[in-house]
Structures are given as C-alpha cells and as structure tokens.
Amino acid sequence: MYHRDEMAQYQHIAIGQLGEKIAQKYLENRKFRFIERNFRKKWGELDIVMQKDDVLHFIEVKAGSFHDSVPKDGEESYRPEDHMHFHKKTRMKRIIQSYLLEKQISPQQEWTIDLVVVHINIDTKKAHVHILENIILD
Image (cartoon, rainbow, N blue to C red; front, side, top):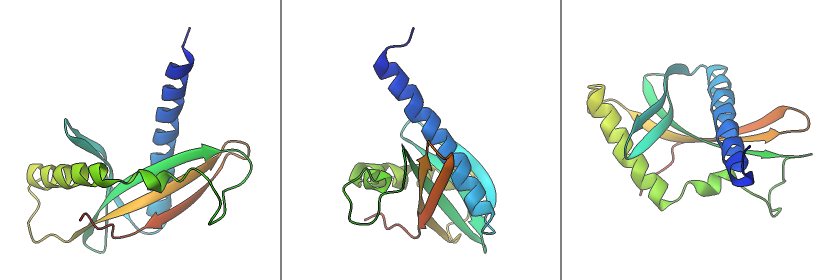
C-alpha cells in the first residue's frame, strides 16, 4: 500500500513525463527535430534537446495538472514556469556545458534555452502548451 506522500510523488513524476511527451510533440509539429530526451548527470538533467534551423534548443519542460480551465493571466494560481529559479538556471548552465563537451559539439554551435509550459486538464484530457524562448541564464 502506498503512503499519500508516495502517491503524490508518483503522480508528480507521471505528470512530468506526460508533459515532456506533449512538449516534444508540440515542438515537432513546429518543425523542431528531436535529438535526445532526459540527458542526465549527477548535477542535472536536460529534459529535451531539439534542433531547428541549425540551432540547438535545450528545452526545459514544466508541467502542471488542474481541473476545469487554465488560469487566466493575473489570476492566483500555480504557475509551473515559476520553478525556473536561480538554482535551476545554475544547474542548467552546468548540464549544458557537460552535454556540449560529451557530444563533442563545436563551441561555434549556436544554441538556446527554451521553457515549454504544459498545463494538463485532468477532466478533459487536453493540454494547453506555450513556449518561452531564449531564456537567459544570468
């Protein structure tokens, strides 16, 4: 039997995996070419790596589930993109450097970081997706 906290953690992981699948399909429909998913090291993970127009895109996916409707701008709500905080950006810098080195990608290769936010409606089984392009890693 699962403890409630374990069930919540399992549900969180399942929503994250579903969000990544939805994000990948969303980007492929916009002419992005899939390269890799879940590149992991001890110090971080890249959710999705894709390419479009000779530019590598490191995609961070933030997914959240809800009932009824997507919250409108300005409404109090959970916003998955709020989890793209300083420590996450620091880990992303390091994991991107690791990826570029391990894959022997030229230092001249143009790349960017994009955040794909996926709101999954549990009731209707539909998702609302939007992308924030060119995230800056101060």
